Length: 327
Image 1: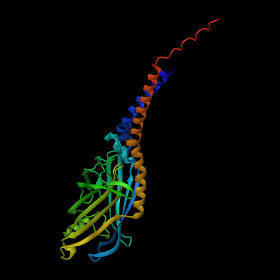
Image 2: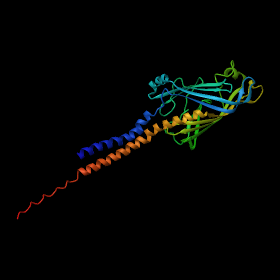
Image 3: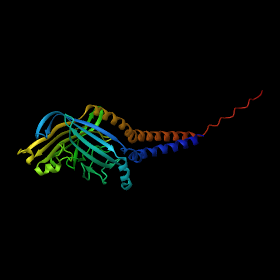
Image 4: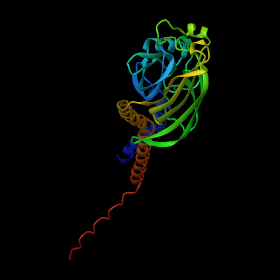
């Protein structure tokens, strides 16, 4: 009976020991994915910012500029691309909507970002664009890969339509969460005007005829939870200028926008709570369950060997009792 039990325990030990690496190296890359139908929004604010008044073409100090960013998963488009891509693909239709203190639109820039559901690597397909302009991204955008490493990454900048390094600057703790801090500086670069302008009748084409150009620079900062690759917080020190041309009335340049853009507090709290819950799921697949199954396999193996050793011990034979001798 002991031998049968030890064989069963040995089989279970082999099963759990084999399951440990399978869960980490096979199941995790196939289960840890961004859902195709994900929807998220984010509100950022730049307080005491500088904003261009297009009526007078002068820069004014304003109490607040609000940026609303939305990312909506396009399931229909992702399923269509997956047929030829041969992997799980996510299509995010994004919109960055900027409004002044009066609630009026300053600019709006739509995007379509197509990427691998697990690795976040860009997937090139028809429809990939920024503000209607076709682009071919390299590097990441919005989210880092699962199990983010302590190294520099290539990050796509939607304003310049270029990819530049975003540098790992160290490990910190943000709201009780261990995060990696990344920073990217985009130097002054000439960028296109948004297709949707804040003043009716003014278009990028009409501005181009005046000879006035738009320039942009930013310092981009992200605090990223490394297991999920999700930023828990972000900031930008953002500046835009209009330079030259007849639109400025002989002036060399004028500030179109300047401000320190930060996530609004309620969105910080929501993001941190969401990342904490997702972090636990990643830990289960990459650490808790693989190591738990491996430990269980070792314990079952030890118990099987112990029972097998006991079953092989010789059973001591009891000596016959001596017969009584009569007088």
